[in-house]
Amino acid sequence: RANSSAEQAKIWELRRAALGLTMSKKGGDAKGISFIEDTAVAPAHLAEYIEKLQAILAKYETEAGFYAHASVGLLHIRPVINLKFSTGVERFAAIADEVADLVLAYGGALSGEHGDGLVRAPFQERMFGPTLYNAFCELKAVFDPENLFNPGKIVNAPPLTENLRFGASYQTPVQATAFDFDDYGGVLRAAEQCSGVGACRQTGSGTMCPSYMATREEKDSTRGRANSLRLALNGQLSELGLADPELREVMALCLECKACASECPTGVDMARLKSEFQHQYRQQYGGSWRERVLGEMATLSRWGSRLAPVSNWLMAP
Ligand code: SF4
Image 1 (spheres, rainbow, N blue to C red):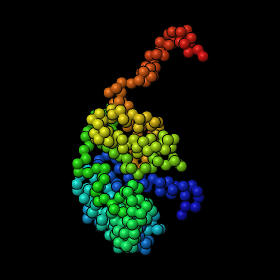
Image 2: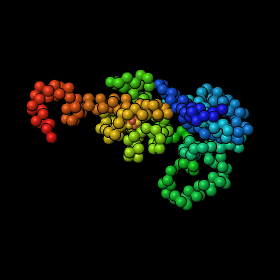
Image 3: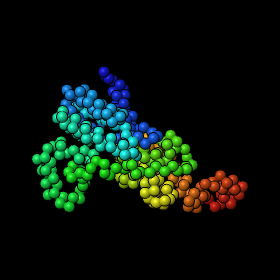
Image 4: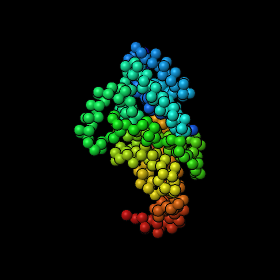
């Protein structure tokens, strides 16, 4: 029992670290993915539900990280799957499908805490039954006849395997870098480390991400930068890779404060990525005159010292 506030703080700290512990796997392409992540059943069924859930995961030879709000029967589950192979994509779809049936067999909820999004939308009709589901569709058609708002969420969902970031055709080219990204398995995998969870868009606590806190623009968040870098590195922006000029604006406001390296639940280290970007950008285009002056500061200072009367005269207010 945690009676003192210091003991309670330790429990909260463990709670905050839990997300990172289930998602921060570095190196390799298998990742903890949040697609059956907040299923809930009545607490009385929880033990039996977990046993059957583990049997589904074992059937698909898949490990998973679990943490729970056990008192209310809610589980956060991150199956570790490599979505760069078709077998991974098949496992992802099959596990989601079987877990949806299992949850509903216990009268539970597929999303006990979070939103439904694209990963739960394909199961809405199963969850609510055809009458309610059709009512959702009618309501959507009345208020959004042109299907402009969040298309595919809740109703008329695309198949689960559409809109995936990865897939069997996704390429992970190996690229030479000035900085060492071996701990991630290369620079592209360092950018892919972002799972899209969006913890960098918080504004009420923590340090990550100061540029997003200032502008509230997605492009100025750690996630916005990681996504842009990933697209540039796997050639979806252009063949210039990290030297793509479009990246310059996205990276400009990153302070390289390294807050993301310690606070991002998946351990994205944007400061190292920005340094690599700057190196490759300057290899391609050179630096601005201001950057070159700052880069030669030691030499300039030596000459400034030798010519002290002139330097002092030039810098006099
Ligand atoms: S290093 Fe850059 S991306 Fe990471 S928290 Fe700091 S400003 Fe944001």
